[in-house]
Length: 457
Image (cartoon, rainbow, N blue to C red):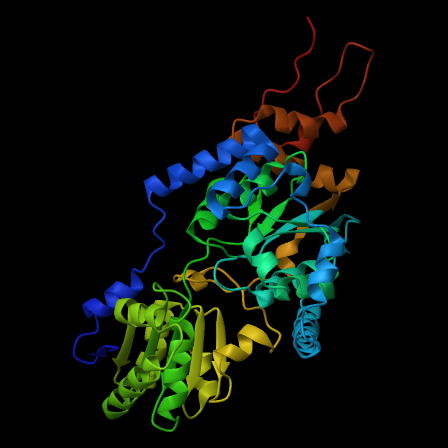
């Protein structure tokens, strides 16, 4: 049964401490195992991918069959009902509409001295999308990762997904078909991340890898960050709900369980100012839990990291949310807009009784790839901006360099980098012949005693 904790009496209750310190268990033994997989792929290339697919997925495959035939994608997609296809299309359209508003443009300006400064935005050349497998298929994960990359203008988008899920559930193929993605590889796990990071004979390397996976995928992304860019180190899902008796208890209980069913390490929390309401929601969670198909997982999540926190005020509720910095926050109280303004650390905020978190997962349009594990304090949702790189543009002229050369030389001297100073000063040296140069005018660097270029003996 989900625990009720009165924080008005003990603001640092052990239950809260446990939830706040819910970390991703990437221990040394796990990282060592994953590092070995990565090294095998780096050394043995496609043969290692085939060996690991046999070992982990129980499927014999040859390097020639690692890439999925585009015709197979279409064949599998044709097995999906027209109604489900229409739902996929609607989700894609809504996500596209939202992400169009995130498009950024290159910019520049020219100052009073005629110097041009700016920043050029260009899409990444290539991105790898990891689509997790396991007991379920996740078409919306594919949509949420692919659409911002497409919107940003990424030239090459590669999809990797475990072979068992891809072949057994054609909804992934249908989603690929609707997104017009055809470069797909039937590999999963840490070995797929390694292949995308290093490249193999069959799988060309990419510049960035996005998409959630199991703990081995997450560990591989962590180890390979720097060799390749990644989206984030994602942890189990989480939700915090601020609600009071004006919201039916069944709404809150259902939303808590919607996250608890993800993973035994997921966290589902209600924050309320009403102790009687806390009890009502507690009983509703228990009732609904009994009828949930994924009851075993949800029950472990509730036992491990679930809680109903009773606080003294909505102000304290918002303070608690900001401490948790959760992936999802639902605000279902009067004046929800005012309450939401006080929440500064959250991946996504859902306002009102009918903005259930499932709306954000599937159809609303904002990205559901969100920061977890308290990282909403400094991370943002996945977006178009994650698939763009920025290049600074600087166009100086002689007059502006002369105006700033004393500062350049002085700062270079303070860092002990004489070569930097001389690179600027070289623009003002006067050639006397092929082998001799004079010192620049002292007026250029007043008061700075930097050893300049010596006269030849």
